[in-house]
Image (cartoon, rainbow, N blue to C red; front, side, top):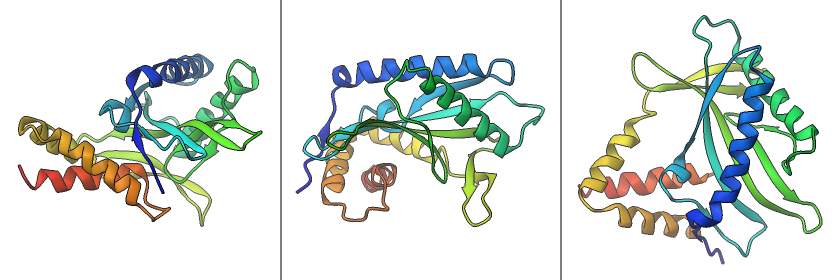
Length: 209
Protein backbone atom coordinates (compact mmCIF):
# COMPACT_ATOMS: atom_id res chain seq x y z
CA UNK A 1 0.00 0.00 0.00
CA UNK A 2 1.38 3.38 -1.01
CA UNK A 3 1.39 6.13 1.56
CA UNK A 4 2.48 9.35 -0.12
CA UNK A 5 2.39 12.51 1.94
CA UNK A 6 3.56 16.07 1.42
CA UNK A 7 7.11 16.95 2.45
CA UNK A 8 7.37 20.16 4.45
CA UNK A 9 9.46 23.11 3.29
CA UNK A 10 11.58 22.76 6.44
CA UNK A 11 12.47 19.17 5.54
CA UNK A 12 13.21 20.08 1.91
CA UNK A 13 15.28 23.17 2.63
CA UNK A 14 18.64 21.50 3.49
CA UNK A 15 18.41 19.39 0.32
CA UNK A 16 17.50 22.40 -1.79
CA UNK A 17 20.44 24.36 -0.36
CA UNK A 18 22.79 21.50 -1.26
CA UNK A 19 21.42 21.44 -4.81
CA UNK A 20 21.85 25.21 -5.14
CA UNK A 21 25.49 24.82 -4.10
CA UNK A 22 25.96 22.11 -6.74
CA UNK A 23 24.36 24.19 -9.51
CA UNK A 24 26.54 27.17 -8.59
CA UNK A 25 29.65 24.99 -8.84
CA UNK A 26 28.51 23.69 -12.23
CA UNK A 27 28.06 27.29 -13.39
CA UNK A 28 31.68 27.97 -12.41
CA UNK A 29 32.82 24.82 -14.23
CA UNK A 30 31.26 26.04 -17.48
CA UNK A 31 31.88 29.77 -17.18
CA UNK A 32 34.47 29.77 -20.00
CA UNK A 33 32.09 27.87 -22.32
CA UNK A 34 28.66 29.34 -21.61
CA UNK A 35 26.53 30.62 -18.75
CA UNK A 36 23.11 29.40 -17.67
CA UNK A 37 20.33 30.10 -15.22
CA UNK A 38 18.43 27.48 -13.28
CA UNK A 39 14.97 27.45 -11.73
CA UNK A 40 13.24 25.06 -9.37
CA UNK A 41 9.94 24.17 -11.02
CA UNK A 42 7.11 21.65 -10.75
CA UNK A 43 6.44 20.20 -7.32
CA UNK A 44 8.94 22.41 -5.47
CA UNK A 45 7.60 25.62 -6.99
CA UNK A 46 4.02 24.57 -6.17
CA UNK A 47 4.88 23.26 -2.69
CA UNK A 48 3.68 19.80 -3.75
CA UNK A 49 6.76 17.65 -3.11
CA UNK A 50 5.63 14.20 -1.95
CA UNK A 51 7.28 11.13 -0.52
CA UNK A 52 6.29 7.66 0.63
CA UNK A 53 8.68 7.36 3.55
CA UNK A 54 7.98 3.64 3.84
CA UNK A 55 9.39 3.03 0.35
CA UNK A 56 12.99 2.92 -0.89
CA UNK A 57 12.56 6.00 -3.09
CA UNK A 58 12.87 9.42 -1.47
CA UNK A 59 11.48 12.76 -2.61
CA UNK A 60 12.68 14.55 -5.70
CA UNK A 61 13.07 18.00 -7.23
CA UNK A 62 12.60 19.29 -10.76
CA UNK A 63 14.92 21.96 -12.17
CA UNK A 64 15.03 23.73 -15.54
CA UNK A 65 18.31 24.98 -17.00
CA UNK A 66 18.33 27.74 -19.63
CA UNK A 67 21.66 28.05 -21.42
CA UNK A 68 22.69 31.47 -22.73
CA UNK A 69 23.55 30.51 -26.32
CA UNK A 70 21.73 33.07 -28.46
CA UNK A 71 24.22 32.62 -31.31
CA UNK A 72 23.59 28.84 -31.26
CA UNK A 73 27.26 28.00 -31.01
CA UNK A 74 26.55 24.62 -29.43
CA UNK A 75 24.45 21.70 -30.62
CA UNK A 76 21.90 20.00 -28.37
CA UNK A 77 24.35 17.12 -27.90
CA UNK A 78 27.22 19.44 -26.96
CA UNK A 79 25.13 21.33 -24.43
CA UNK A 80 23.87 18.19 -22.72
CA UNK A 81 27.27 16.49 -22.61
CA UNK A 82 29.04 19.60 -21.35
CA UNK A 83 26.50 19.90 -18.55
CA UNK A 84 26.78 16.18 -17.72
CA UNK A 85 30.56 16.39 -17.58
CA UNK A 86 30.43 19.51 -15.41
CA UNK A 87 28.08 17.87 -12.90
CA UNK A 88 30.25 14.75 -12.82
CA UNK A 89 33.39 16.84 -12.27
CA UNK A 90 31.73 18.46 -9.28
CA UNK A 91 30.76 15.05 -7.91
CA UNK A 92 34.29 13.66 -8.50
CA UNK A 93 35.68 16.32 -6.19
CA UNK A 94 34.04 14.53 -3.29
CA UNK A 95 32.25 17.65 -2.08
CA UNK A 96 28.81 16.16 -2.71
CA UNK A 97 26.91 13.00 -1.83
CA UNK A 98 25.37 12.78 -5.30
CA UNK A 99 26.12 9.96 -7.72
CA UNK A 100 27.07 10.60 -11.36
CA UNK A 101 24.45 11.92 -13.80
CA UNK A 102 21.99 9.52 -15.40
CA UNK A 103 21.03 10.49 -18.95
CA UNK A 104 17.29 9.99 -19.36
CA UNK A 105 15.25 10.76 -22.48
CA UNK A 106 14.26 14.32 -21.59
CA UNK A 107 16.22 15.05 -18.41
CA UNK A 108 19.43 14.50 -16.52
CA UNK A 109 18.88 12.79 -13.17
CA UNK A 110 21.13 13.01 -10.13
CA UNK A 111 20.55 10.95 -7.00
CA UNK A 112 21.77 10.52 -3.46
CA UNK A 113 21.83 6.77 -2.84
CA UNK A 114 22.13 4.63 0.25
CA UNK A 115 24.03 1.65 -1.12
CA UNK A 116 23.76 -0.37 2.08
CA UNK A 117 19.96 -0.69 2.12
CA UNK A 118 19.70 -0.03 -1.01
CA UNK A 119 17.67 3.15 -1.17
CA UNK A 120 17.35 6.42 -3.07
CA UNK A 121 17.34 9.15 -0.43
CA UNK A 122 16.39 11.95 -2.82
CA UNK A 123 16.93 12.94 -6.44
CA UNK A 124 16.67 15.78 -8.94
CA UNK A 125 15.47 15.75 -12.57
CA UNK A 126 17.14 18.44 -14.68
CA UNK A 127 15.59 19.55 -17.97
CA UNK A 128 17.55 21.73 -20.41
CA UNK A 129 15.01 24.11 -21.91
CA UNK A 130 14.65 27.15 -24.16
CA UNK A 131 11.62 29.44 -24.31
CA UNK A 132 10.22 30.05 -27.80
CA UNK A 133 9.46 33.49 -29.23
CA UNK A 134 6.20 32.01 -30.50
CA UNK A 135 5.09 30.64 -27.14
CA UNK A 136 5.75 27.27 -25.66
CA UNK A 137 9.10 25.76 -24.88
CA UNK A 138 11.70 23.40 -26.31
CA UNK A 139 13.78 20.93 -24.34
CA UNK A 140 16.75 18.73 -25.20
CA UNK A 141 15.61 15.16 -25.76
CA UNK A 142 17.43 11.92 -26.51
CA UNK A 143 16.48 9.80 -29.53
CA UNK A 144 17.32 6.38 -28.15
CA UNK A 145 17.11 4.59 -31.50
CA UNK A 146 19.61 6.92 -33.18
CA UNK A 147 21.49 7.81 -29.98
CA UNK A 148 21.25 11.49 -30.90
CA UNK A 149 20.00 14.66 -29.23
CA UNK A 150 17.58 17.27 -30.55
CA UNK A 151 15.36 20.14 -29.39
CA UNK A 152 11.81 18.88 -28.82
CA UNK A 153 9.16 21.61 -29.09
CA UNK A 154 6.28 21.67 -26.60
CA UNK A 155 3.70 24.32 -27.63
CA UNK A 156 1.66 23.78 -24.45
CA UNK A 157 4.50 24.19 -21.96
CA UNK A 158 2.95 27.18 -20.19
CA UNK A 159 -0.75 26.37 -20.57
CA UNK A 160 -0.77 24.73 -17.14
CA UNK A 161 0.32 28.02 -15.53
CA UNK A 162 -2.88 29.75 -16.64
CA UNK A 163 -4.95 26.88 -15.25
CA UNK A 164 -3.15 27.07 -11.90
CA UNK A 165 -3.88 30.80 -11.72
CA UNK A 166 -7.59 30.23 -12.40
CA UNK A 167 -7.80 27.43 -9.83
CA UNK A 168 -6.21 29.57 -7.12
CA UNK A 169 -8.48 32.50 -7.97
CA UNK A 170 -11.44 30.16 -7.39
CA UNK A 171 -10.01 28.90 -4.07
CA UNK A 172 -9.74 25.33 -5.35
CA UNK A 173 -6.01 24.74 -4.85
CA UNK A 174 -6.54 22.51 -1.81
CA UNK A 175 -8.68 20.30 -4.04
CA UNK A 176 -5.73 19.91 -6.43
CA UNK A 177 -3.40 18.88 -3.61
CA UNK A 178 -5.91 16.37 -2.25
CA UNK A 179 -6.58 14.85 -5.69
CA UNK A 180 -2.88 14.68 -6.52
CA UNK A 181 -2.15 12.64 -3.38
CA UNK A 182 -5.02 10.29 -4.25
CA UNK A 183 -3.61 9.79 -7.73
CA UNK A 184 -0.10 9.16 -6.39
CA UNK A 185 -1.33 6.57 -3.92
CA UNK A 186 -3.51 4.78 -6.48
CA UNK A 187 -1.15 4.88 -9.46
CA UNK A 188 -0.12 1.41 -10.69
CA UNK A 189 1.48 2.59 -13.94
CA UNK A 190 5.25 2.68 -13.41
CA UNK A 191 5.65 4.74 -16.59
CA UNK A 192 3.35 7.51 -15.36
CA UNK A 193 5.52 10.03 -13.58
CA UNK A 194 4.61 12.55 -10.90
CA UNK A 195 4.45 15.48 -13.34
CA UNK A 196 1.81 13.64 -15.38
CA UNK A 197 -0.29 12.86 -12.31
CA UNK A 198 0.04 16.47 -11.16
CA UNK A 199 -1.11 17.74 -14.57
CA UNK A 200 -4.08 15.35 -14.46
CA UNK A 201 -5.14 16.69 -11.05
CA UNK A 202 -4.81 20.30 -12.20
CA UNK A 203 -6.77 19.66 -15.40
CA UNK A 204 -9.59 17.88 -13.56
CA UNK A 205 -10.01 20.60 -10.96
CA UNK A 206 -9.74 23.30 -13.63
CA UNK A 207 -12.97 22.03 -15.22
CA UNK A 208 -14.80 23.20 -12.08
CA UNK A 209 -13.65 26.83 -12.49
